[in-house]
Amino acid sequence: MAKVFVTGGAGYIGSHVVKALGEKGYEVLTYDNLVTGHPEAVLYGGLVIGDLLDTRRLHEALSEFQPAAVMHFAAHIVVPESVAQPLKYYVNNVQGSLSLLSAMAECGVSKLIFSSTAAVYGVPEHVPVQEDAPLQPINPYGHSKAVVEQVLRDMSAAKGMDYVSLRYFNVAGAARDGKIGEGKEDATHLVTLATRAAAGRRPSLSVFGTDYPTPDGTCIRDYIHVEDLAEAHVLSLEYLLAGGQSEIFNCGYGKGYSVLEVIEAAKKVADVDFTVKYEGRRLGDPPLLVADSQKIRGRLGWTPVSDDLERIVESAWRWEQKRATSKW
Image (cartoon, rainbow, N blue to C red; front, side, top):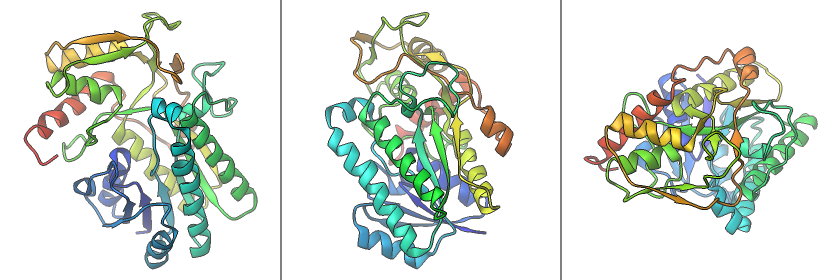
């Protein structure tokens, strides 16, 4: 099987993809600075501890491993933080990606799967949003990903790279077998925060904004189970290795749930009530983001198996219960 180099493979999404790759027989090498990742989450292959901006170490790791493709997850992802600290996001997300692309070019690696985001759409004019919708991000996080996508388009047009950019909607849940899940203590994913509140690991859960133009006044998002997303990465890899040309795919289910609906699902699954606090809107949050995922379903044959909010929440709840008695 082919070799795959994974940046950020010790993080939440990256570790689930490493797990999926390993289970399918791929040889994997994770490159992660462990700022937010956990070495225990890397279940397959080796781990090189290093930063994307450490160009020498990155080049050495790539040159020695000689992968057929790279999967790039390493990035800062918190929207409110990006509004408060934009330079941090442009340095890490853009400059770090440029460092990786330069190292790939020097090592002759020309296939990349990029971890992008629905935040590149900003406040879309039409929902569900399609891949050809205008890119008009409203926060530095979304802008940083859009900049990297433009670099990838330019490199692809120059015949130097074939890539798949996967625009994630809201990733949630944990591995169905319970082996890994979200391990970051200051996680910001709503499903994680809700299940941690249910588990008593948080005193309360904050809802930011109740006056959006949605049925219950809270933001609506398309939640995708992390293992369905991991499968989308494996299919993208197979597509590129088979000679596929550069493409962009949305990763979501095509249905949206409000913040309050997620909270109610968490309370139901855990059979626990917890305190909810209502606060003002956060900067950079669009009211509604739901994917049109017909393209990836049709082109790659992607068929999600956890397309159900309660199933997603249930997997996250099981993981939080496990974390209470584990090294995590």
